[in-house]
Image (cartoon, rainbow, N blue to C red; front, top):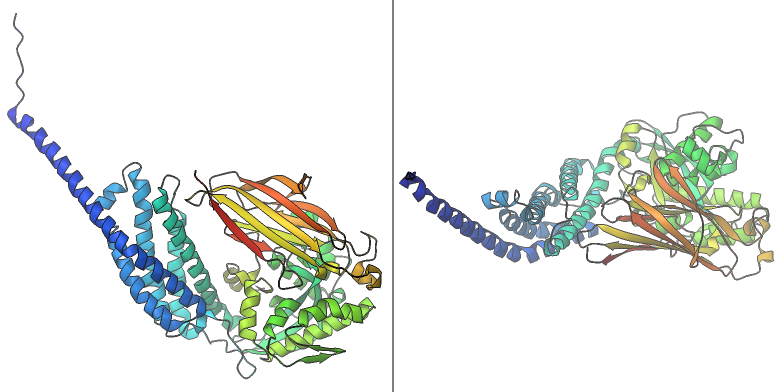
Length: 587
């Protein structure tokens, strides 16, 4: 019996050649489109990079004319770049395996650059002045609370745009992206973060200055002058506390006192379980110890509690500054005659942290001098004396000038800026801090240098990290010739020995896996502080000794390298310099 063949309809047979031809044509057209876009991207890349750098430099130097010129070229290059990453073929590429890992970063980068140019930098350039990005200065003894009002809307728009695009770029996964694309993408992301930080500070200032400068009612602040000769995490013990009243931009100094005057051995309460366990109840008893924690807002809250325990009237906030910062702010001002000293911006820190101790063998006399000098020098600042604008900006960058507001809405805005002194919320920051335990004032002579090495993939993912902390005890004189309270009472350690706790907080998502002291394995105490891992290590140094702690850190999850390193500011401006080294390796 013969088998009957089923004929294939001619129409169906003819369709397949057309389908194949159409697919071939689509591939050719798509390939040609990508080739054309690639040529455009190459042409706009150099202009985009150079104009973005010019824009960032203009913002940093507060040069409005340079920013306006940079924005013109940036908008042009950004437009070319954005158009070269747009179209149906890019949509198709964003949905294909592997190809989407190359296309998505380009598409996101194009949109971000275009938005940065048109939605952020253009509004800033149109202001005609970049004074809004500077610390407001005194004029006739007053800071105008509304000095930034003309710029407020533009700053708000620019800050919102940069935050939105920063979040969009941070969300892009580069783990399967080729180096040729990943490297410039990471560079662009870092540039945008830098610009966003500058603009955010100006935006926050424009929003909070009227209230904080007393335009809506008189404000009352405490000024805490930290004494770096006895280190604490944010600098040093509270050597002096000064009352400050601000009314419509005019500042008036009130009473001043040593920290011991507001301390209470019975305690004022308010500590968290973690704070009491890690830092002991001294944080709630002694004003000198409120900044055992690296979280300045908590230190400010505890100081306010202590003040309220002995004084009437509400406190609206706390300002912290140290002698190094005071010296920067008073640079160029006339000398201040105090006791046997003629204090200038250049010698201020040395006088307050070293020379005055040698002059006053009785600690009560030195405490009185420190408090009086702090009040007199800060009084010069609030009267508009010295190079306040440049000095304050430098102090803020070095985390030597900090501000906390008791008003929740203001503090919520301040929290995102460096002036707030917040640390625990900074998940991608590494913290290296020190709390003195020798009960001495020898800390002025000790340098603490921190270096972080991040070994990263070309897409920014962290492979491993090392943190090296080196202490050098530079005192080379006769310990016995020092006042006893400078060399130490000899109860905790021998006189002249510098000792205390080193606190290292690795970035969230990383863990310390190894610790050595001068190359030898050593133990340490692991703790949890508000969910953050912290490693405590006690160290002791004799005069002339150098000691290095080395921490090996491993990421627990896939993440980018930490982008910030925060350390305890020392008594000399040249110490505590830190750097982050990126060692690019294959992954």
